[in-house]
Image (cartoon, rainbow, N blue to C red; front, side, top):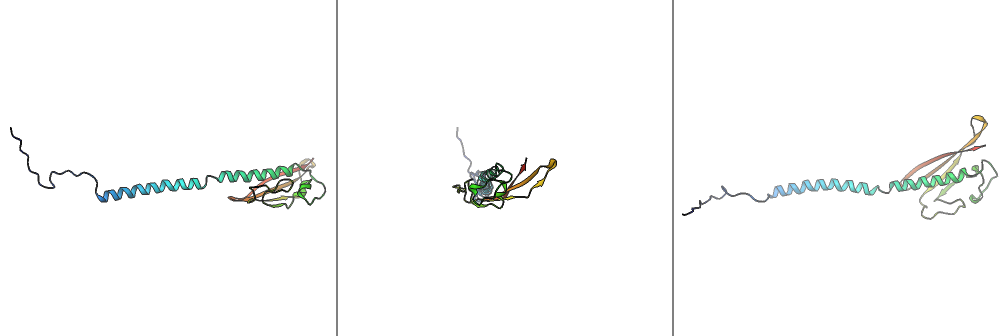
Length: 155
């Protein structure tokens, strides 16, 4: 028995293997566009990952100042040095460039924050009780005009 092979004409029975140059370029283009989208989302997420920490730091600073002020007396004598402040009115107009403790010493690592305090005139509440509004405003990196308000009543 003899097997005869049929001669093939070029291009008629050949199967294509691989990809063309145009298909390769198009697939690379599609993959690079998808990769660009994914990487831009990752970049945005990473660049804003510290924002909650900065916001929390500013709130902690404002709470610290407000607590310090609310623990003072409703009224008293006038003091010029922060270490001698003994009433709420002494803090009116306080403006710290950089965070300071109750004794007036700078707190290391928090020099980029600015704190201002405003104390309003007494307001009459029901029952004949007077109260002063205390506003503490903090500005710093990534934080603009964060304001906490508290009230000190005269009872």
